[in-house]
Length: 313
Ligand code: SAH
Ligand code: SF4
Image (cartoon, rainbow, N blue to C red; front, side):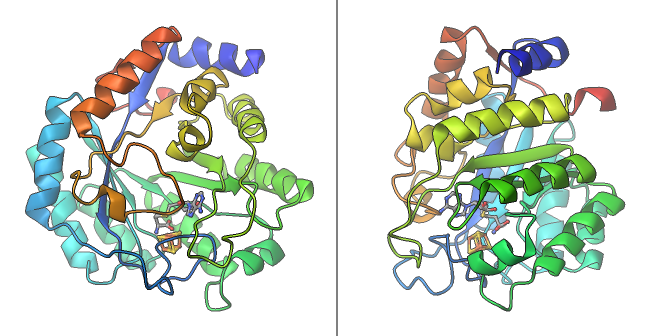
């Protein structure tokens, strides 16, 4: 971990990049066994933000120093390719100095290309597991490993800064699976890697499963930092949910990104991928001042910056 921290410091110093996360729809057509937003969860509270709501979030975020907005949602087909392109275009038009990241799941290659031409800069799509058989145990049979992989390679080819990633300690994951994930990450060479511990959600088939380990997550963050020295690597909310100082520990293990929530406070308790998610009662301004304090106490500082990968500048 010291090695990873040193590597991170040599490239990014003590800077921590922030991304304003806007969870704009909790509707989802998928049925991932691990996730509280899966379509078969009748108790999930569904909502959608419209373009104006989203632009209000960006406005607030911009004032607070965010220069990247991450638009995340379930796979909600109400948001057509054109609707999302229009929202991306509007955000980029209003904030030309900001990056827009999309994290809205699997779509056709042409849709990804449309969004890229509308100005989207980055795309997060975790591969979830690089093992075909493990993928099959986490998803229903209509959700295909090959589709996931096809999307990731399309995104990269189209020119997105692309992020993959996986849950640590997801049900049935073996040490071999994790090694396979690292090999995949090394081969794919993404710009971003999102990893966080699996946390069960009470209304999913995995409700009785155990959470992933904080220690293992930290170790994997360090390994990924050493494998891909300049990668953008978030210390996730899931890590902060399992350990009150999880995000600080993540940064100290080599992570360099935080993704505080910018969603309006009245919808935050409705976007629950897993149980006990933190920060669902806070306003964006509270989140950012909390994170600033947390980072200062461990000798790091949050910067107002798009936070691109260093070698791209
Ligand atoms: N629908 C989009 C984006 C939202 S889900 C997508 O699936 O890509 C974002 C990520 O949350 C998923 O990739 C998954 O790795 C993570 N996630 C879902 N359920 C989780 C759980 N129970 N514990 C931890 N992470 C979870
Ligand atoms: Fe939908 Fe994403 Fe949850 Fe899967 S992980 S059910 S795609 S929101």
